[in-house]
Length: 404
Ligand SMILES: C[S@@+](CC[C@H](N)C(=O)[O-])C[C@H]1O[C@@H](n2cnc3c(N)ncnc32)[C@H](O)[C@@H]1O
Image 1: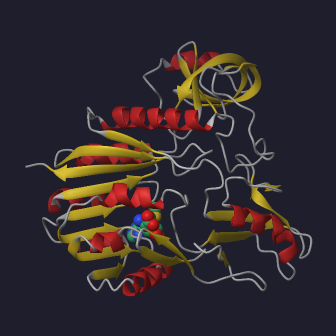
Image 2 (image 1 turned 180 degrees about the vertical axis):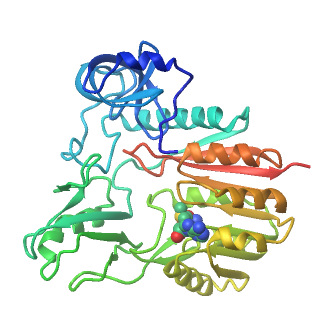
Image 3 (image 1 turned 180 degrees about the horizontal axis):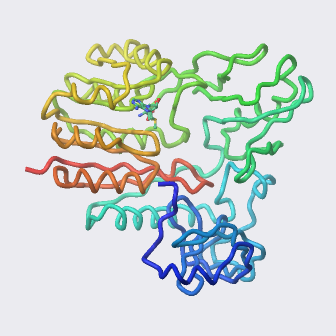
């Protein structure tokens, strides 16, 4: 799964002609899932980070594999039509963003195309379903930051890991962060007067309130609250919460829809972003989540919303799944990047819920799982949400229905 997707079979003997550190010229055809550009050298796939479709580049080979190579840009000989100067001063060194060199609108178009191609190629399915693309603000959207730091109290350096390294890149600005978060991050060196942790997670609530983890003297900590539609969610810096502040409603709507029923399951539930609206449409909701802190917030969020029909299970989905009843009405799965374990896919096929909604930010994992669920579940629709502008990532919501 860590390997890029090789677009089509190549003759591996061609790679013998390429050695590491070789310099070659390539033209970039398109982006692949994850955001790298794809060029070819004598038919061999060459993946080039931070390239733009249409670029003609002089590159250096930095990695050779049996079926493809990776290269780094040495010189842009002819820029592609969508290339632009990256707006953030740190883009060249910082590992946080990878697509700032592409126009905002073009990023979404190329990412959707790449995700769609990965789904086609890796699922083994002929996908022909309604599709929709949802995009929001491309800047100042992020609600969370995972900061790296070093130095002494009063003189700390605060930033992110560098590109493909664990070297700290100190930052003066970070224009993908929501403004209050960006202001806080740039003030942080002054605020860290007693201790400088190596890593600090920070998250923003709906009223501008902040939460940091781990807890440190002088820094805000504890729960923050954000409304999505008519529901309120409390979470903190240690728990997962979706990162794009402008697309929370759209994501929830794309996932939940309007169908009603008896028994629904929200697997990998976090603090309940989907469990709560689900509980308004289904008589009984079971939410399964393995992170203890998230479980605590999930229970609290359901209680606050007076949703007494939400049962929260503190467990890994893999150990719980065999307890799911047969023929449930609805199952939502929002697993981490590697997707569903083989055992979970097998259990879903055996238990045959009427509907599955699958949320993924990893097209290759989603493709594999759609392929293995396909004998029992037909794909009915896809929504692509640009939850991570300026990066190669894209969120995909796939709706599936049990076959008769
Ligand atoms: C991508 S997040 C989605 C959370 C939630 N659906 C949301 O949108 O806010 C995945 C969640 O799954 C949880 N998780 C990871 N592995 C798990 C497992 N094996 N079993 C249950 N939960 C797990 C994580 O703690 C995290 O809260």
